[in-house]
Amino acid sequence: MKRKYYVALNPEERKQVFAVLDSPDTSKTVRRRCNILLLADENMGKPISQEEIAARCGVSDVTVYQTVKDYHMSGLTYILRRRTHEEPPRKPIVTGETEARIIALACGAPPEGFSRWTVRLLTQRVVELGIVPSIGRETVRTALKKHNLSHI
Image (cartoon, rainbow, N blue to C red; front, side, top):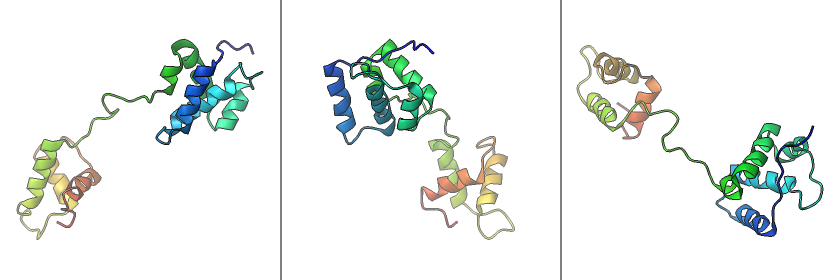
């Protein structure tokens, strides 16, 4: 199969890649991208196949292809940066206000017929009161645990 994208690192880029690899605070993902680039570099002789690079680096061949493509299309600085999201992929169910309402409910008097609040009771009451439309017991438990209220 004819390769569409190539990696040809000049000496300055190679030095930059090695500097990133030597840095102790470099993430595992960026290290893998650096290793892929070094193995795919054509200036250091005939490069090995993408399948072999994938096997050596412990990634899929699609990852190798995308890394080489990103280098070819966007350059080295794009490869060496850590990708972050402005917002998390999933928004948290319990925000500060809802957490405060759950804690206030837990600190209040338990329902009639019960001597204390349980996580199950709290979960049911939070949904009944409409604080959140639906919530799991584990979410309520972790909200309580954050404020050392796990033994309610």
